Image (cartoon, rainbow, N blue to C red; front, top):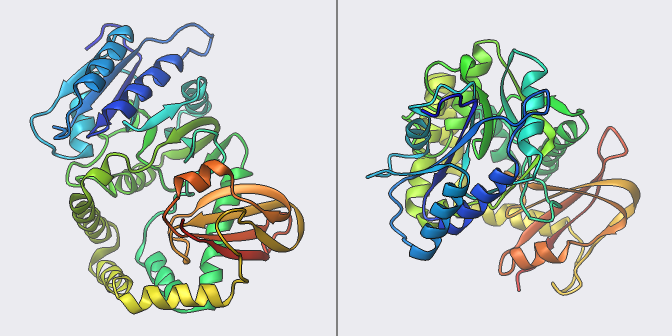
Length: 385
């Protein structure tokens, strides 16, 4: 433990050495301050979960970045999951605040200070998450996290097989995104995203994440536990981070799928009982049917005007709007769509987005955010290269 430590930052690495180096450097630049403006004592700890992909140059760069930040690299002998790695990173700390996150995060220079400002505004706030972006220019917001439930799974199942319900389901996602965007500097949420969190140690029950969740749904479980004890969870909209999504998990696709399935099943059993878990299992069984995916994509295309080739692609809207909310993602039923805001009579994806999604279909829906009923202005599919 570092004497006088006020904030312990723990980044968990797995096969993302270069991204982790950038994360440490950006976190060092975003060094936190006390309420009076004086420097706050922060310790950065990187926990490597026995990464099998080694990169000597990148590892040395990470060690140098940690040395200049008075940080530490801890190498685990096994990959026991995200929760276990976070626990290893905070085990020797008594800091008042804990900042935990993935290795593929880039912090804006004032991100941590804005999260701390939210935490100091109300002692009942147990956790603060930043406003996350998918891209470095900060144009595409990360999906507005919604708490998983068997009822939401049932709604998504209907969205995959019924075109009318698909639009209704997408509009629900749009309303959630709009509520978070327009809720002011600190917005109450019911679901945290584990990619980056600031936590108040006094509100925890001795640990951060339940180690029984190896990779996914540990953040949903933490959200429920904190809310159950009467604490608040908020999103600090002025705190901005970029999450270079899936850099670690994509290196182990089989492990990723297994961990997601086991974590979801445990979460449903814990918080929704046997009936809820069974309902969710039925919904997930439906999702795996090939005809469900084909039907959903056909319904989407039937409701969408031809959009032409990828080069110069744009979505022509039914009318002009001063504020357009755009949902975009890899599926037509809006599981976890990215979010953009625009204006005008058509929407053109930025070049950075087009380059990043090369080779993949992207499904787009645009809503009129100037009206409370969020009418659909247009939908389309960006074709792959």
